[in-house]
Structures are given as C-alpha cells and as structure tokens.
Image 1: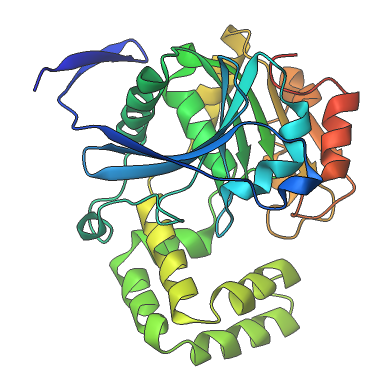
Image 2: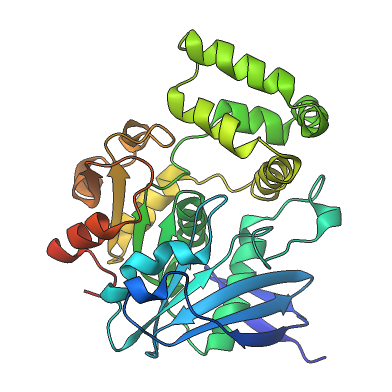
Amino acid sequence: MASYRIPIHGLQEERNPSTSVKRTLNSPKNCDLYPRMESEVSIFTTNGMQLEYRIVGSGTETILAFHGFGQSIDDFNPFYGLIKPHQRLVSIRLFQHGNSQFPEQRIPHQPLQKLEFALVIQEFINFLQVSEFYLLGYSLGGKVCLNLLESIPRNIKGVLLLAPDGFKNNRIYSFTSKTAVGRSIYRYILNNPNPLFNLSKVLNSTGIINDGLHRFVMHHMRDYDQRKLVYDTWLIYRDFEINQRALQEILAQSSIPFNALFGKFDRIIRPEIALDFFEDDLAKSMHILNSGHLILNPSTKKFIQENGLWLGE
C-alpha cells in the first residue's frame, strides 16, 4: 500500500494506514427540538482504531467536536442552530463510546499517545478533504482538544471549550491510571464495588471529596459496564496531559481564537483550577456561566451567540 507523509507541528511522519469508511444515515436524538439539517453517522478506521462520527451541515468549513465522558455525539444538538451555511459540525465519539474503538489489547500497557492521536486526526481530516479546522470540546472532549491544539496548532483555526478537563491533573485519576498499584485496585473494584461506595460516602461526609465527585462515583460505578468504561477511558487517555506553558506560547504567538466556558457551580471541573492558565492576555478568554457541569444547553447557546463566541465568527 502506498505511503504518504503527514506534517505534524513542523515534522513529517511516514504512515502506511489502512483506512476505511462506512456510512449510515441517522437522525439526531430529539431532532424535532432542533433545526433539521443533513445528518450522517459514519465509521472511520485507521491503524486498528475506529472513530464513529456524525456530520451535521453541508458546508466545507469544518468543526471537529468531542463530547465528554459517558456522553454522546447527541450532546451537541443544542448548538446546531449556530452552524452557518458554509460550516459543518463533525461530532466524534471518544474511544470505547458507541462504535469508536481503541485496540482492547493495548489498553492496559500501551495507551494512546498525543502525537499518535494527532496523526489519526490528520488522516481523518485528509479524508474530509480539509487541512484546517475548528475545535469544539466538552469536559474530557475539551482535554482532547487542548492536546490537539498543542500537537498540531498550524491546522487549527479556532477553539471553543465547554467545562473543559485538562487544566489540572487529578491525583486520584493519576494514581488509578498511571501506577501499577492503582490499576490493581481498580481491577478489584470492577467486580467488587461496595468498598468503593462505602469509602466515597465516608470521604464525602467528612468533606474530603466534594459532592460532585461523590455523585460521579455513585452514578458511573453503579454497574460493571459503567465501571469498565471508566477504567478503559482513564487508561486510554492517561498520557493526555497538557503542557500549559507550551499552550500559552502557542496562543500568544498565533492568532487562533480561543475561548473556554465554565460553570460557576460546576463541582466536577471547578473554574478555579484553570485560573493559572487564564492569566494576563488570556484572562478575556475565560467565561463563567451561572450553571453546573451540564453546560450543553440552550442557555449556553444563547451566551455564545450574544457574545460572538461561535467558531468562525
């Protein structure tokens, strides 16, 4: 198979990908609530990885959107009305969500690398026949966007983040995903969750962990499939730590529009964890809304519209 070169952040990488795409027509969930637009769900496969995505809109200006943990591409439905006639929103499922799949055998010991994922996205946008694109990310999807911005800034035209993860490393997450002891403990919890539930209740009642984290444990750990999804997702993306200084320099030296919206009452990703990043010239890029973590709603859409924050404006 013929190889081709993909420029990444000033480098060139030889690739011999085996790519394939299959498409199915699909209507967005609750489509009657939002503008009726062209919608297509497809699968893109390369190098043993599979991405499920939906295209809404028929323009050529492309916005890649990444949802949060345990969520889906339907989460961006409230923003369909913001899509301009010349734009298209390409919502991509995170790995192990829906039909997006990362190689199972790699999860325990060979996680996804930042440059590796940037190459996958390069192959994907080459398939879409674009070289530049915008990024839209919610929660964990925001962390994915930050890593893409750090890896391939020359291909990115603008970034809009919603309650984004990634600005501060979580100690519990790092211990569970990056240490052999942490991974062993979690493998035990997969089949024996009650000690975790009891510990969470005690830590929450004593104020050691906040209500948001306690609710996350009680909600996302309630059955085996949910616990497995948490485990797999944490391990797959465990090397997606951003270099804040490098990102600040990229934004300072470029004209890439960059905005991040946080919920004032968010107990999952507190706005204050990002204050160190949004200092000096970046202060105006941070916006605090009167909401919690569930920020993908018509009120946020209205705020984006009224303040001219939509991508491409």
